[in-house]
Amino acid sequence: MSVALLSVVSPNSEVSNFGVFESSREGNRVSDSSKFIARYKSLICHVALKKSKKQSWNYGSFYADSSYPSLDGSGLEKKGKFPLLSNVVANPAGEMAVSSEQKVYDVVLKQAALVKKQLKTGEDYEVKPDIVLPGTLSLMTEAYDRCGEICAEYAKTFYLGTLLMTAERRRAIWAIYVWCRRTDELVDGHNASHITPTALDRWELRLEDLFRGRPFDMLDAALSDTVTKFPVDIQPFKDMIEGMRMDLKKSRYMNFDELYLYCYYVAGTVGLMSVPVMGIAPESQATTESVYNAALALGIANQLTNILRDVGEDARRGRVYLPQDELAQAGLSDEDIFAGKVTDKWRSFMKNQINRARKFFNEAEKGVTELSAASRWPVWASLLLYRQILDEIEANDYNNFTRRAFVSKPKKIIALPIAYAKCLVSPSRTPPVKL
Image (tube, rainbow, N blue to C red):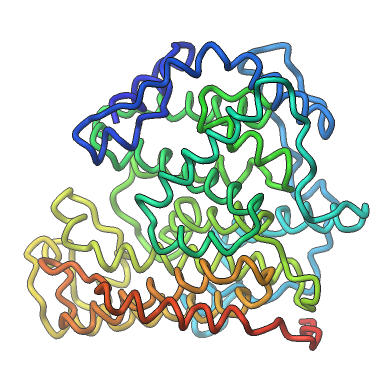
């Protein structure tokens, strides 16, 4: 993790993040990345050349700001929206959508518009061919392979699912996963206490360079190559960094609206990053927006599940990721959480929180079947396994203070063929009802 910290704080140094994950799990063993530095000029040229065929970037400043058009100026039609799930869950009376939901929904529309634009222009949804420069192909292959190794180590079940995907999509998902993990490690890893807002600002500048085709290290290069091949936008990546900033300054959430926005930043963004790579089935009649909304719902559901599983662990760090107003309505407070006692009030409160998370999982299911056939298995596996964590919390009598809910290995093994069977179900041929 010290390698990651050094390279973020000092972005112009010649230290690579290539060994960041070995340092966190393998006794601070850091891979020797010096052999790659001498070859980086050709690699960067390779990525930049491919990027130049799609977009024109301003290279006047090493850290030139990138501007992205707002939704309001995009000309997107806002009529006929599908219901916002969190609004239904948080406000059973059917109140209007609140600001956090609208903010997130605007991002969903923007991401869906990128795919629509590509389809209208007749571009193939599959990846574009590589432009291979001498000496770069093996290096890029090595970069993607390293991403795959990291994914296999830290997300074994998900990694197995990616093996059913096409080679190009599989590698791209690995690259996205690794970037997300590295970002999360900045505020949740061994050196998280030393990370400052300035460090995150530099990480964001590095992200912008990555999208310009100027990667800093090997793992960056894999993602930089990925975003030249798929209609992946920078906004969800920036939003994830914003979630990390939130973690540095915020340890309480007054209501579900605030918590919803946090869950989007740190997890819902992953779904928006991934859909362009996983692809939507050609035969799907679902709207692009509805598929993105389902991907967002899965991210929200996963993060809510993480929060409910880790209540005790977070409390020991002085953090409470639960809606303060709902705690008060249940007759509970932070002091009750810090005391760690399972009471009838706590059980009742937890039942409501678990029901909310399950509703997000149910919403997510509607979109998984619409993904391309080769991409469904890892998503179904993730959904089924994460949802089982909620079952385990119930089985522990809602004691998430001292008992960590986890899915046993036998249950994981059973879930894999179930997920595979579900991924064989074809998308509905019936056009969705317009609202």
